[in-house]
Length: 596
Image 1 (cartoon, rainbow, N blue to C red):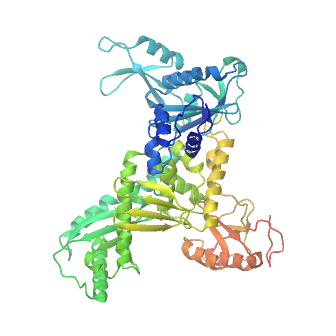
Image 2 (image 1 turned 120 degrees about the horizontal axis):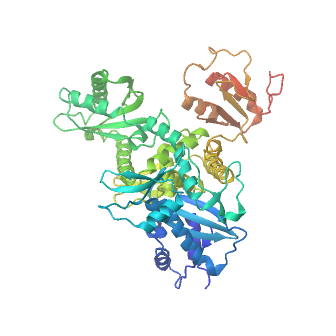
Image 3 (image 1 turned 90 degrees about the vertical axis):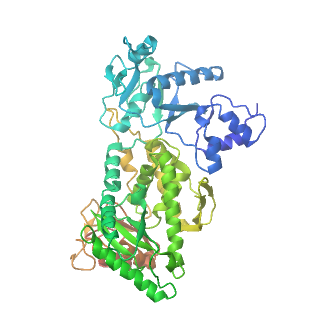
């Protein structure tokens, strides 16, 4: 039967590698028929819903493998290979396995796996055979055979006794590697020579090996809501004596959503003011003065538990609690006539918060995935200066939302060439996203449409390049060493490229960097305190260059007009107060030696 073009297009769209090993016969070339045929495999049970919402199907593992040279599989035995994989995966991963899909491209096989959750180092086996608990002796024998009799009995809280096997591994994310090694000779770093006579398939894992322990520690540190209780208590205390009634406090921001990647992110708290007072709604000056007065009273009332930073030009109150930054904003409907933009933004923020909390409830790993992708872009100097928090989250929603593991979600995000613009409908029950090359993201919510600007096309292409490079590193360097430790490939994804960089500045001595002549911390910027990156970025952009503020503290600068290099280097040193410089092979006036 002639291959279905619609089926091939659909499989490519959802990043499935190769052609189905089991033939999928499509009689009528329609979406409905293709969906129906695909859903015969549990792996594709959500394909129709994903297509309707415009998100990718996602899988959590991709293994590329080949058969042993002594065992050639032809088309007639494809069904046997599928049955073999199903039997082995179910026996090893047990309840963690959701479903799988097997494909072939040229002489390689591609195993796509969906997990219900990240595999644990404790493998829970079949129920033990006791007087009160009959077990399956064949299943027990099979479990012992797989784990070489390294099994133990464990009693669980429900009173059930089961056979278990504990994997000796120090890193949580190498558990997948150990379990897949029961089926394949997995490529490691350095490569572990496979024994040809054992009949195992030779494979390599194309899903990233994430350093879960370090990622989780950093994630919890940045997103643990340690200050929320303090703010709630403070607001409860001041309610009785406050001049207006405070009906509610609504939190918005990446800290509240659990997607924060840098400590500088500031959350917004909207304080909804109730009725029972007269408001000067016909006088803009008096209305603004009333908001200013409320900010002053609020700041005075909060200062015992909060560090008050002051009132902003937008007439909001900045404060910090336990190192977390907040912005208090009064929601007074009577002032809406004077500040429509404020309430336009507020309505969007609240609706987006509802949308994100709703989708995150269904996919627990999704907020952590968003934070990890932000960290990657921050390491390359792109986030948050060129792309905002919500824009990154929306890109992740498009591609990695359906993944049940961090590794699977990261691969989905990195393996995509993103369109320069999207439309997203976050109204209740919708949650639809579509590509639309407009240079921005148009978000439709219950109260209107809000536009999130994307960076210029050159910078957006840079984002796609960062993802492409990270994917290349991930696929070319094995994620695990032959001693079952995480290799350097995960760290290498976070090292920014200096291919188009004209010069770099660093606060500390690094290889290839030289100390600035006549350096003085009193000259220009201060090395003892954080520089105003927004101000620096604005000035350098106006001079015709692009600065990248990397997570390491290094600033890479790309200069288009090299005739201005001398002036830009001087301005950068004055603005930042950096002590060390790498001129990337260029020479400027006053430098006697060429800096390599």
